[in-house]
Length: 128
Image 1: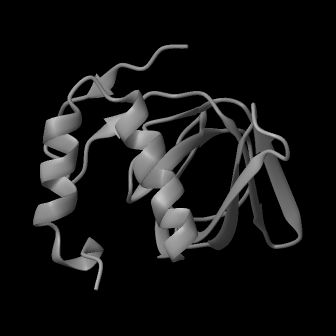
Image 2 (image 1 turned 180 degrees about the horizontal axis):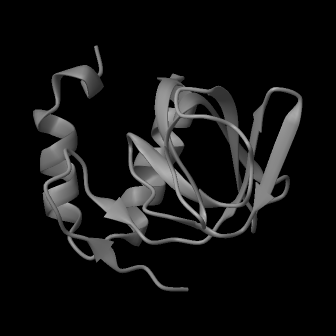
């Protein structure tokens, strides 16, 4: 498993992690283990589709290794389309999904202190 963190101008750190993901929209489904650039804001999923930018979708990230597997369910929209797949921006993340995403990113980053600062400095992600 390649867990290299991607450095750039993004608001949140991304981790390069391969997990089982399904993305559903327009009665179609992409099933892929080719995810990468997972962050609190979205992810990239390898797979072909004829969806357009802005298409609303439902994303399920399946964390295997537990019985039963953990299903992180979020809503999003297609942000970018490439030959390899689609980038999805998360638009709705429930509290339980937030906790799982936070743990997923924290456990797979090379710089947990930086990631924790990003979480604590972001107004939209503060717990009440």
